[in-house]
Image 1: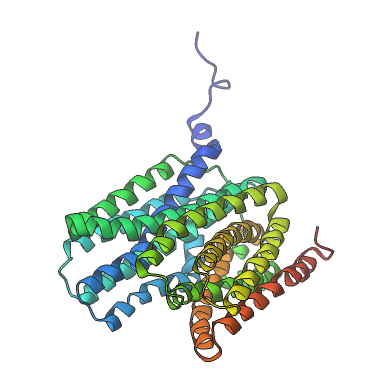
Image 2: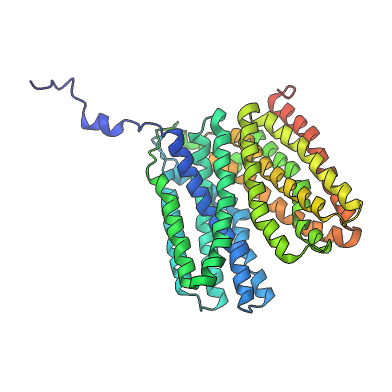
Length: 421
């Protein structure tokens, strides 16, 4: 018995059918893998490579130039709009998967070249780091837009757990694993291990088939101008800055305070390594749970309010003297956990403020504001501590954190034209 022409699905209809939405486990695996791979490059640049270069007697002023690669993350908003225009096809389909995998392939290739150039001049290594940073930052733009589109608002906290938690795991791989592999096996093997890791972490993204999304008018083509025109984006940038001021000041001085309190460097290394990662992952889980239970707005407000308490306790402990090392170390670990929880809850809220027509551009503006705030607070904290002392600087950090909850109410009122729901 043959099928009639009307009952048989045409090739055109089959090819134009939108793929089924990915399952939640697929989305979490894909997002977590990509965020871990991106942070791996950051860990290599910020922690792993500087330690190895110093062990090879590279001058400190040259090692300081490695931070140029990190500037890429603060400036990625400059090319977010072209990337978003490329990601959004005119027919409503998305190129997120293709762009992510292309970027990660470039990172893998750069890591392989990086391994082959272990004995190269420093400028060559720096150039390769910058290439990896640009590729990873571009992938970050695409992956953020992917998470905003594919995770519903009620599940966005889970996506932010993958985002922030992946960041902590990536830092472990890019710093600790690379240094350990370099010590045991050499430069080429360490670079190859990272390249294989990036490739493996990208595999879950290959299984993703994005369903067709909304088709937008060419008038709404993604651009920085369109983003900054929106009140939600401007308020989101203000939220980002206000939420991070106090924590970033404290974060920049955590190491110096503990060293001046006579904490041995080996112990500080363990505290920053194992303790910092454990605290970060615990804070990430806490932030995700709070976001899931309370929703983005309430969760962000709750964590910001709790953060005031932890910074106030730190300021009081430092003002009372630096003699109680276990107390200070414990408070800094709690502060690390609160920072991680703050990232998860703020990301969940800020993703809700991104426009559906250009989520990659809008969220990149928020993240660039965060990176610039971190850099400025880091510089300012050192200057203030030099001239006013630790007690006054941490008192200022607590005061800045105390400004956040009432300002959040003001911001949310402006967004909703009503009281904080």
